[in-house]
Structure formats: C-alpha cells, structure tokens
Image (tube, rainbow, N blue to C red; front, side, top):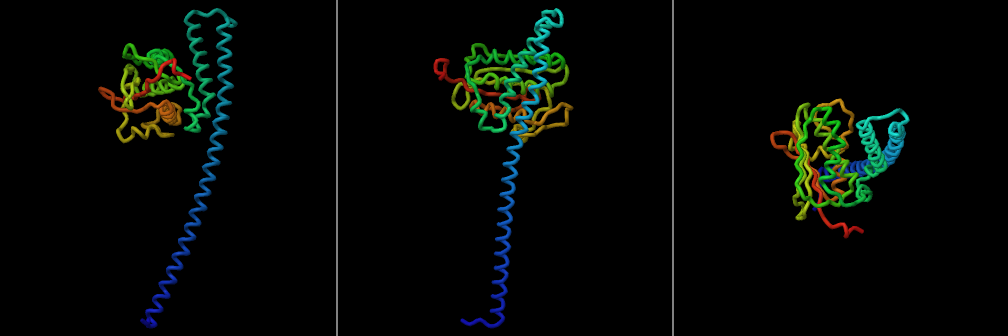
Length: 283
C-alpha cells in the first residue's frame, strides 16, 4: 500500500509531535526527580535541625529548673526562716514535680523519633487507682484555682498494670489539663477507672469527661496529629503536640487513646492499657 503525499506529510507531522511530546515527558520526569531529590535533602536537613533544636531546648529548660529546685531546697532547709507544715507540703510537692519534669526532659529527644518512644519505656507494675490519685493530687491546685469540681469513680480491686509510670502520668496530666482548660469555672470533670477488654484481653480504662464544647466527629482523629489545635485561641501557649505525644506513648504500651462524647455534653477522652503478666514474669 502506497501513501500519497498528503498522507506521508501527515505521518511525518504526527511523528514530530510524538517526538516533541516524548522529549517533554522526559524533561518533566527529570525535573520531577530533581524536585524529589531536593525535597528529600530538605527533609533530611529539617530532621537534623529538629534534633538539634530539641537538644538545645532540653538544655535551656534545665537551667531555670535547677535554679527553681535549688531555691526550693534552700527554703525547706530553713535557710530562709521557719516554714509552716502546709508550706513544707507545697514545697515538697513542687520538688516532686521538678524531679518528674527533669525526667521528662531527659526523654524529650525520644519524641523526635516515634519509633524510639517504645525503646525508652521503663516498665513496672503499678496500681491504676494509685496512679490516677497521685496525678489528681498533683493537679489539685489547677482545679481549685479554676473552681472546678472533681467526681472520681474507681472500680475497686483493679489488678496492677505493667507500664512506664512516668509516661502514663504524662498522658493523664495532659488529659486533665485539657479538661480543665475547656471546663468553665464552677463546672465539673468526671474521672473514671474501670476494668474493660481490649483486643480480646483484660485492660484498664482511664477516662476523663469534661463540660467543654466537645470534639466534632470528623476531627476525632485529626486532633492527634502534630500541630493541630481546635477552637479559638485560649491565650495559653501550646504547639498542638500534647495529644500527638500522648498517643505515641499509649501506642508504645500496646494500648489505645481516643475521644468520644461525654454524657450530657462535652468530650470523654479515654486511655486503655492492657493488663497482662505478673510480677514474677518480668525479665
């Protein structure tokens, strides 16, 4: 079959267009690869800067904290004059929280890498009721200053949980602080600890219910993402990392952290930790 001159010219024109398109695609792919490589380098550089920033922040936080703790110990020693029993109690509570914060700062770099959180956990057996009551005692001044009433319901006879006490205290503290922030003066917060099941095994559920505006259904996973803060600014400093860090800690325990609706309105944040093993099984 022979092509006439017009058909031949058409094929040559189409071939030229295909060649131009191919060249364009090759150039586009090359540009895309270069952009991907540039982004990869930027991500690597950001990770390095982030680690450096966290290390620097950890160092900068220690200096004023050590001074605060030093003055607290001086007061307790009697250098500044006699103290009442209640003043000593407050100072001892402050120093206890200094020690807790110092330990958390030591582990700040773990948060940079989500995978390293699990490796940093120090497990032991702890009673769920003691754990919650200790954190609530530490938070008492915040609740009292905001005129917030606490209702606490702890199921009796709960078995001990194998967990990293410092890290779980960190999670509970964050949940209590969030509840206090969204509950108006004169309102109430309901705290519950009960036995439940999770993934077919016994577990302990810690829940904190507030009287705030609640969390819309479509935001209930998003609030655990980094730098996410819902609602209007409250005037309090924050980066929107608290719940992200909490979920990483809970995931590293093999548990679950989530939110649903509280009875009568507001939010109910719940923390589920597995109950497993016995003291004699720890290696």
